[in-house]
Each structure stands twice: as structure tokens, then as C-alpha cells.
Amino acid sequence: MRPILAGIIMALCVNTIVAAAQDAIPPDQPASEPYQPRISDIMVLQQERHLKLWFAGRAGNWPLADYEVDALKEGFETLNGMLGGSTVEDAVGGPLAALEKAVDAKDRAAFTSAFDKLTAGCNSCHHTLDHAFISIRRPTRLPYSNQSFAVQKK
Image (cartoon, rainbow, N blue to C red; front, top):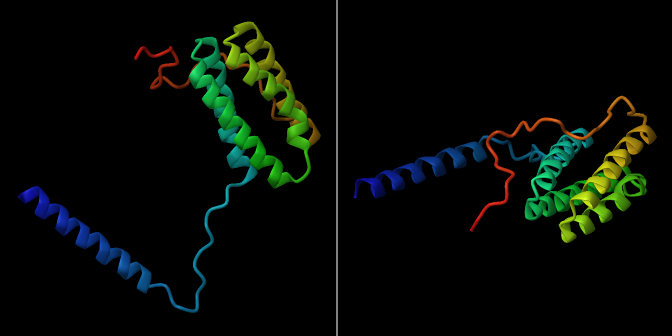
């Protein structure tokens, strides 16, 4: 009974705080705009996905590699939209398609080749956009000690 009562009291407190915060905004002041990520925010995520993709493929964890390829594709589509035109698609579209094929086939040699082409495509795009000072390469160390990249048994 006590946990239920505590939950009800907590819910009432939260509702009161939210209502008070909403009342504190003057009616003539526009609500704040929703967060819009910047290109640099998305690129940090892309670099993380690139890194995780490498370790997933090297471990033969094809479901995780497939997941990371899809996440990279979404990020690059967003970037292409933000930049306008097809700069990103031109640089990484082919390598991403080759990566998808290699992951579907569970082919490590094709994966390695496609990954290296994706990395070259990233660097090509950076040059095109006057960001040649950002140079991407194959990861050498895994910073995610809290994630296993080995294939998990069911």
C-alpha cells in the first residue's frame, strides 16, 4: 500500500510542478523552438556509428553491423538534406550500398573493402566541404568497454 501511495503523491507533485512551469511563461512569449541538431552534432554521431560498424564487422556481428549501416544511412540522408544537393550521397552512397551487400552476405573481405571505401568517401566529402582537417580512418581501439561486439547466443 505504501508504494502505491508514494507513487500517487509523486505523480501529483510532478503535475503541480509542470503546471506551475507552464503558467510561468507569459502568453505573449512564443514557446521555444524544438531542438534542431547542427551538422557537427550529426557528424559526431556518424563518427561513433562508423567506429561501431568497424568493430561489429570485425567481430562478425552482422545484425549489429546491419543496424549501424542503417543508422549511418539515416544520418547521411539528414546531412544531405541540411546541406542541400547531393554532396554527401555522391561521396558515400556507393560505399554504403557495398557495405549493405557485404553485411548481408556476411563477407568479411568485402566488408573490409567497402568500409575502407566508405572511410575514403567521408574524407572526400570533408575535402569538398573545406573540412580536410577532419580525417577519418579505421578505428584501432574500442572505446566502448561497456558493449560486447561478439555475436550473442540466444
